[in-house]
Image (cartoon, rainbow, N blue to C red):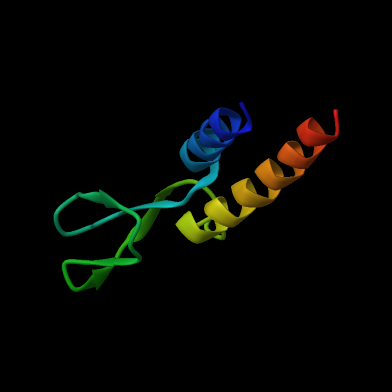
Length: 72
């Protein structure tokens, strides 16, 4: 059960908070700060929430949730 919840939390955090960039040259939406040899601009999300930050946050939340569920 906790694994399913963790997947859901990761998906929600990624879609709501993870930063996405847009390439000014080709228009591609990407997770990279550079594309087509040039810096990209922030398209959506919070700049400090890259993929690694989202994964760390979700792992912490899911670890706490699993501990609580195990204690019950």
